[in-house]
Image (cartoon, rainbow, N blue to C red):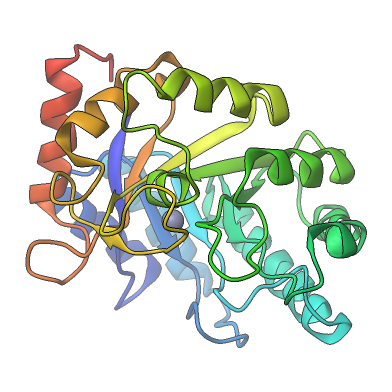
Length: 284
Ligand SMILES: [Zn+2]
């Protein structure tokens, strides 16, 4: 169970490793381009070379790319087209830099309902996979269930994945989104039921990565608000329940917390998760 964080790439993609090293992160997630824009910076060869050098020197792996927040495979045809192009570009970068995969939010059905957009969303994801290099996974993240966001339930994620029908589809489980969607993974009595539902609808072998975030909001609130580890409604005991459960044994944990100085994931939060891992004697 590797523990790491989402880190900034300001100054070049390879600079992520220095930041990760400074906080003793063992795995990282990065944005390959601005997450709030469609425009994509072209990767220069020397940046790719430096990225591989830094990855090798620090031994930090796996690397995940988080896709653009604008992606919405449940939206209008125009939006879906843009989303496909953006995801393909992210998958190309993932292949170039040796990332394990691209994490993305499926988006929103805008009140039309999940069933109404399932076929077009699955078709869009098939097209992404057909036009992307082999290797990186396409990793859909569970949502908190806010508004009409797709994929808050394991059933919806499972149906989407079955409709795509590819071995390259994986799932990112965000602990905050999961808790906000009503799965009480913080409770040692309830987590078995939640993860059995994951196994039934998706399959635990599809779990590629965990976004490890405490929750500013209560169980089932449907709201996406991340908190530092141990300072929210999941709490340290909640993370003991999660990290001690066999379903999470081999998953890399990536922090997306506000940080103690509000500057994003930091060493404090990495250390909190590592302390739990050590207490539970979970193998690294
Ligand atoms: Zn997340």
